[in-house]
Length: 473
Image 1 (cartoon, helix red, strand yellow):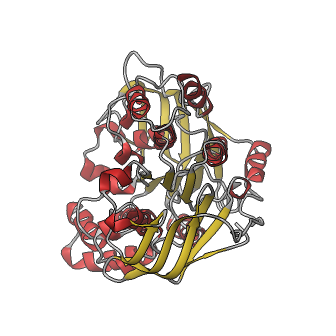
Image 2 (cartoon, one colour):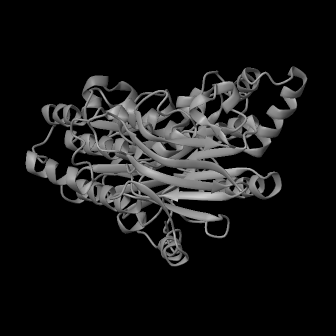
Image 3 (cartoon, helix red, strand yellow):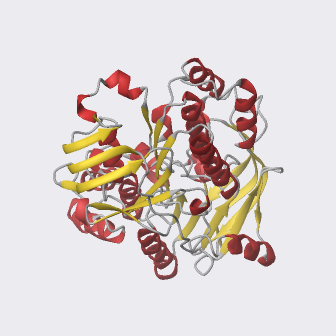
């Protein structure tokens, strides 16, 4: 029996724009695990938000059609009546939090559903355990990594106990071990509790034996199609070998350091990193990996003076904490984990023009920028408001404008989040060119390891508060 039904749905963001979803008729069977995939920016998040009742309530136009969940017209449901039926986890989890800590967020969500007060503690503890967030339930969100925030968002969804669960790139910032843990938990919800789950994801690894149906959003027709067995196998085969480790070089003895750490420590309430000595090297593409919450983003914050540190941290032999902020910011830049935090203008064209105006080198002329926009599949979006782009499109634009700026040292925090495989390769090639053609230094945090070893020069792994170079990635 189907629980979600779309009937000839056509949705546009503006009346004069082409449809994002076009004449879509589709159903999802109750008690199934469904995976939705397709290129970045084709409408996967839009489809989920339509099912969740967020669109067209808050933006866009439903030109035609209807959407029912559990035989009820979504557009007619109040939020209170909709919550027991359908809940959604956003691609950017921080957009959903209203309180200061995970525990407070869960209590707030259940209170809004008018859950009996005596039942709330039990449901909160159960949701925290489900998503493996009990250990940091009382920490403020500002101290949590992106991956930890994604886990909290999933815990909130679990606490709501909705019949239909919509998840938009739920593992984008999750380390591989946590990804498998949560995938198994979601499978339990389907098989043991009869929930219906619809996940939008680009990374198809580990799904094949867990899902019931694979759906693909066709970029040309703007419609979701159910994958045949042959098509599904081909898609999954693309990812079958993606996570196998590959050999990668170790630093050479005469390499020139760009960052030098000496008796260095950084953290929040307690140290996350305690490093006796470490060098990161100029004109290399260095990849940093490690578990969620281990301190990778905190390290970057310290290196760009957003976070205090103890001991010594030098950039090109100069103590970072003693450098003038403005001068240093022109030499070392951070690409934030949340792309929207990087934008200063309204449209994509304005963001690119702003970067051109302030670029530090002549490497990026108009022709090269136009070529990169085409390669990143961003052509045609020049006049679109940046905040209305998909998360994958935002991420690609963010990387592009920071490369145009041309700072000699570039730190990137999860630059591959929300990208399809083709876009991953395009972004990695741009970063590789920045190092080997423009002679920049690129240091990148990522949990997305698909084909990264083919482009990276060095690999640093963070574990037990220590960073160490590894010969595999």
